[in-house]
Length: 141
Image (cartoon, rainbow, N blue to C red; front, side):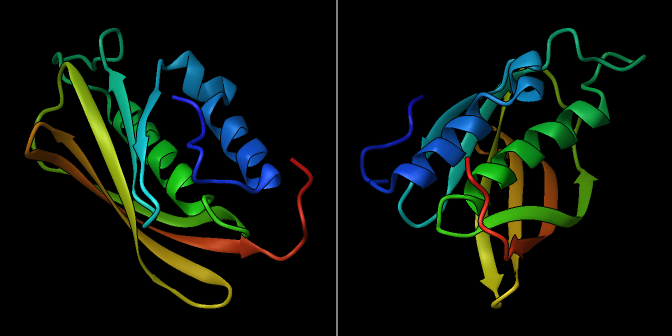
């Protein structure tokens, strides 16, 4: 996916393009599926080759997928945001192609809170919560 046309600011477009094509995200085969003007981001990944010893997705791979969706959702606006704290609950075994859907739930002048669900269809497989910090220094993307 390319950065949507409704994001007109060239700096934000460069920032998001950098996140879309971050080396780690590309290494894991992550694909940005959609973004909405209200801040929702959806990222897809096939976990084939990322299984743990019992054949389910390795928890680190699932966490990385949720973190990528968070990064996109948190950086759609003027501020550049980085994760301060993250927590994940693994609800069901993760296999095959899955998506992470991130949305902001609250914010202050310097922080924001996000909810990310890792899903397969309508089934929630993992729930991830994060608090981000809004970097005050302007970053030249």
